Amino acid sequence: MATKEKAGGKAGAKAGGKGAAKGGAGAKSGGAAAKGGKGGKAGKAGQPRQAIDFTKREHAGAGLPVAAPRLQAHYMNVVRGALATQFGFTNGHQIPSLSKIVVNCGVGEAVKQPKLLDVVVEELALITGQKPVRRKAKKSISNFGLREGQEIGASVTLRGAKMWEFLDRFVTVSVPRIRDFRGLGTKSFDGRGNYTIGIKEQMIFPEINYDMVEQIHGMDITFVTTAEKDAHAMALLHQLGMPFRGDDKPVIPKVAQPAASVAAA
Image (cartoon, rainbow, N blue to C red; front, side, top):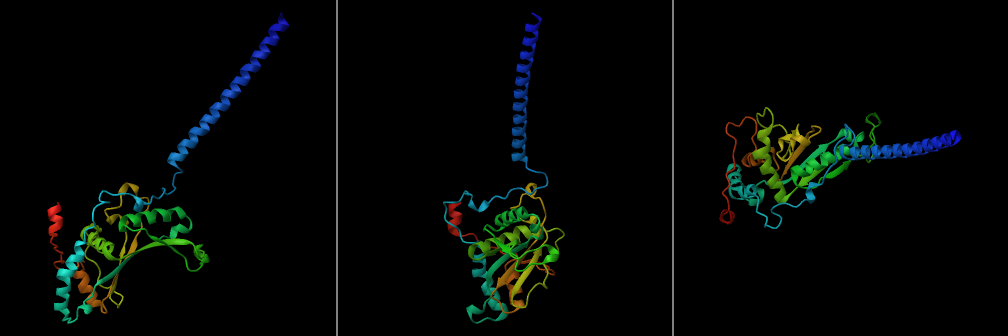
């Protein structure tokens, strides 16, 4: 009887041990799955968030006709006549106009953190409403760990209606949000009628969500005009609402709403 009890006890212990081992393996696999699920949601700490292409999203006015930019109408109706009177232009082709706007952002840390450039591209797409172009290094610099062909920045070139809409939002909404703003500098013209301004923070644009910002970066905005002299370009931008430093009363474009849009509203 003693030998049978011993044999039964050993068999029970083995079966219990196998069951416990299986249960332990299941618990380990469940713990690993739980860890994997947490890692998939939260991600590693300190890593930049995943970029999203906002240019492919549908918006509320997708099926409606596109309205003409109000600042372009102000230029055609008011600014052209004012510039012709101020400088004595006799030919309409002599009156300067805005050709394009280039928004450029360099990301030096993209050499070590390539995902950081994806976030910058996403923010530029939100600000301008157009998909940016990634810029690559033209030559290798060993001191900076830079190789030829690496992506180190992004830029957007705006023309047409998007250009006028961006200028309107930049002058009326973004510029007043600049910290300690005392007017735009007047010494940033290149001698050929083009004006460049440097922005220190991307958060002045209302399209940027404060909670989603991980790193503050700046950008350069270049306004390319058809003017041959800096004085003509400065007068053009001043008439379009640019608040330059030293202006007692900056020009505020007053654009009458079209009759069709008022009736539709």
